Length: 286
Image (cartoon, rainbow, N blue to C red):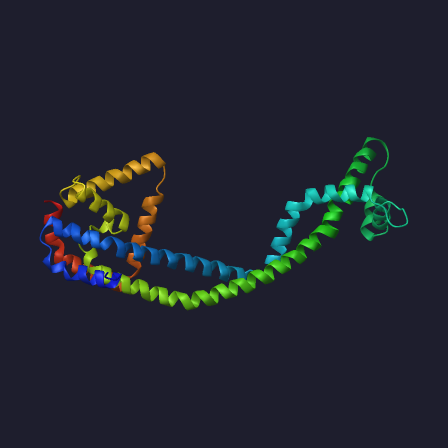
């Protein structure tokens, strides 16, 4: 069985001999798998670049990451932490039988913040009731979160940052080793595809469209390239109407964008397209 390179060379060797619709669709059929392989390489390239970019951003933001992680975790865990904290200090006792609430209350009362805050809280009338509620919220809610939970989450954030940076640097190193090889593969595959792709209308140079062309022709639904193109356009329109989205078309446009990036190869492709334009036009409108 021929490998993909040999198959592409066979396709390219037929470029000058195409003279019928059968030969045109035969070329399309042979083009499907190599083009799928090319699209898979482009997808791997995109994913690898995305991982490397994400890893680089992780390394750049390493200084801020512990603070961001600490704030996120603290915000997420604040309410359950406060509930558990209040229950524990009201239920548990020290070894000497002293309730933890009394220990905490005594400790907070002797801190600089506690002395200042307790000194400004009103204790009489309705305002005093609001003051007691506010005191409970601050001393049993905000203070434990700031004093206990936030530092603990910052320590967790530091550990997460260390692990993330080590992993990110490894990803960057591996990506720098893999990306040149992947780029070379894409350049090579594009060079192999440039000839036969000249026989495909520009807006349909992706595997799904070409495969649909071949299926329409082999099943007798289309007898010319023009009819196959119309059938595919109708199929895509139906997909858009049924799914209410353009994901398929967007993925195909992305493949075409990757083709456009290879400027040197595309210039060669356009020259070949010009050589066979009249012949393809006659098959398209036949």
